[in-house]
Length: 116
Image 1 (tube, one colour):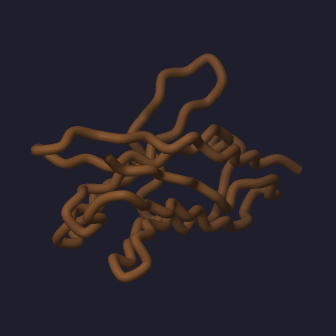
Image 2 (cartoon, one colour):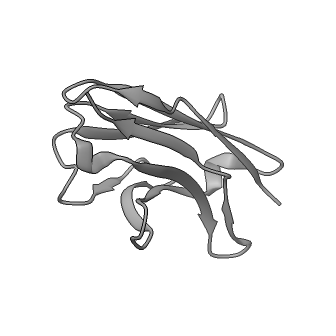
């Protein structure tokens, strides 16, 4: 069982930056692949970024070069650094922990709003 709590969302102007955090508890964090997803109003949830237990990262084309996913296994936390934010980045951002043996878990989400 894994519990995930996201934080760091808020209101930011276009071109600004935010760093999201997702704190995990309840299991061996280092063994999980971690993802960040987002869901805008009226749209399907989409995968934004992934980091494996070995530190390999992958990004959606829409955020490449602007967003960076990282993890600190000592703190059981995954981060999403978001730079050069655009209005179209507005969404609820969710983290997801995934392990082939134990399944997957979602956090409750944090709202990111990019607006002037």
